[in-house]
Length: 173
Image (cartoon, rainbow, N blue to C red; front, top):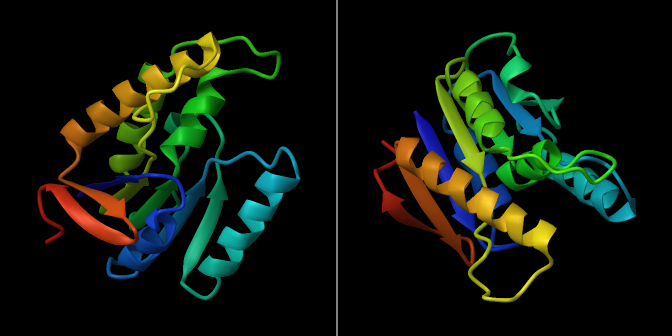
């Protein structure tokens, strides 16, 4: 089963995803895609680790090449988050840009084939109707395509609003 969780920034997706994971079989893997670049991202990583403490997760930091990851055994995986994975696959350290769609989709498919349950977290971006620089606009469009494709493949899609899950597709059980 694949569950896609979407919503705006800081809407409770992570907390809900971690809680949801606890209702599925062990082992539990937390696949962290955020790169620890600066103080803000390092602080966010530390907060997430603290919140996961004692919940039975094995954390695997994987910033790119999700397709190359081999989980030790089948179980439940939480991928946090598609936004970071997409940015990591799209932009290299020099700022060069490639289309991340196929790489991200292959990675999610490979991960899904290794899990009983895969919970994928993503953000709703692009609905603010602001004008962005070309690179940011390209990222928003790429992420939108990836989110739409993942939603099509997912068994269940939930949008989190103020911490409340709103079913958009399918059911959890």
